[in-house]
Length: 70
Image (cartoon, rainbow, N blue to C red; front, side, top):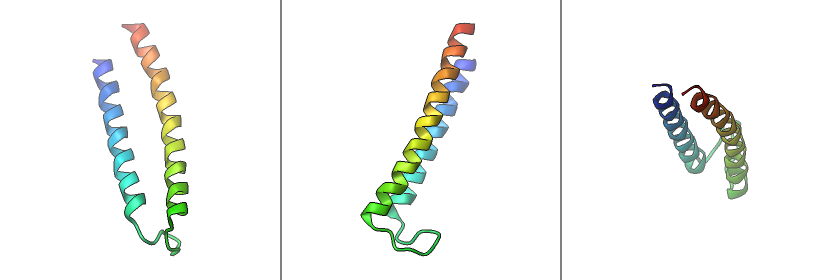
């Protein structure tokens, strides 16, 4: 059961990443009022990707512990 919850939580994280990536790539003006250029969009997407890589590493560590208990 815990393994199914792990997959479900990863699916939710993937959905969140997809939605946020879509928002970052399609917006014209960010929260501070500056116009988004391709460079600033790439930087924003890179920051989001680094955050999700950190989450991925944490999820993989959790997977190792869940598989050991089974």
